[in-house]
Image (cartoon, rainbow, N blue to C red; front, side):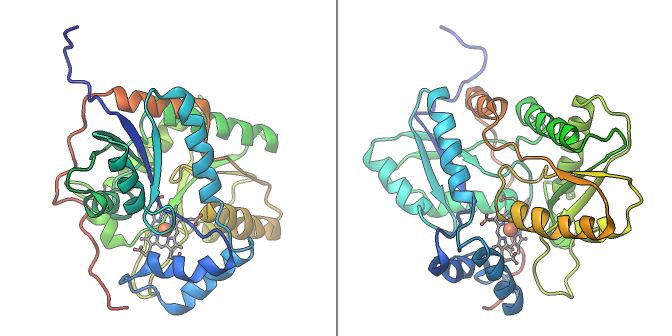
Length: 321
Ligand SMILES: CC1=C(CCC(=O)O)c2cc3nc(cc4[nH]c(cc5[nH]c(cc1n2)c(C)c5CCC(=O)O)c(CCC(=O)O)c4C)C(CCC(=O)O)=C3C
Ligand SMILES: [Fe+2]
């Protein structure tokens, strides 16, 4: 059959993710992998280690990724592999396995929907680092925050949270990982793309819900040295000050309920709301919502994506660690 567009014929999918500890002894070595050369103060690291230890040293991200793999298997016609940047199974090891299995060309689904250094460029860096001579070609799929599958899944979960809260006057407060302002300014070919894409995605979710009410976008999980400016307002500062009568937090910036969600939102942000007597619910991330899972297949059926220009989303200046 002649096709009008070139359909990239992948013979595998690689789920490329962040990785997380699977027990108390993994926590510090994992964190050291994450922040190597990034100038994150030791005190911040020890504080974040405590968040993980509060969950028995186990990040929820690995279970979430395993669940996504299981949900993808019946929907795709090709084998599904999983590799991480910061913890086992490391992408390096997975790609060796893929090579041994004779994989030729794999679509790469990074567990992040948007542009930016941490959310996109760093996954390209991972791909170059783990690619092997004679191994599979690894094609990173496009940003998907505006894909109807992502939007519909997020909208569904937001509707469920609104129903749990049971208040018509609740305000939707979208939240995403804060990043340094300098990183936000250089996101995408002409800058500002991380924030612009997240805002667009939030707007699409709001529209899908048929809501006319104003909504907010706030940031969470700030890291780095205190003198470096990051995107604001922080979710907790926002909750301290808002005059909204009730709030649904919508973690639009994440694809699964990992530590940033279950600690920074479900523990910290919830405590602030409770202190103020502010009714609050948190929408589930897209996770394994069937429409999101189907989106992955749809992305693989699109023409092969044009890679991001090498000049966008540059790495921040390296710090000595
Ligand atoms: C934009 C963005 C996403 C969303 C896109 C995506 O999902 O990729 C994201 C996701 C995640 N971030 C995660 C964990 C961490 N991020 C850190 C630190 C940082 N994140 C940053 C940005 C982002 N991060 C940045 C600019 C830093 C500063 C240091 C650096 O420039 O790298 C640190 C260091 C300690 C600290 O928090 O200070 C940890 C432990 C986990 C795993 C959670 C789990 O284990 O369940 C996930 C999914
Ligand atoms: Fe992070």
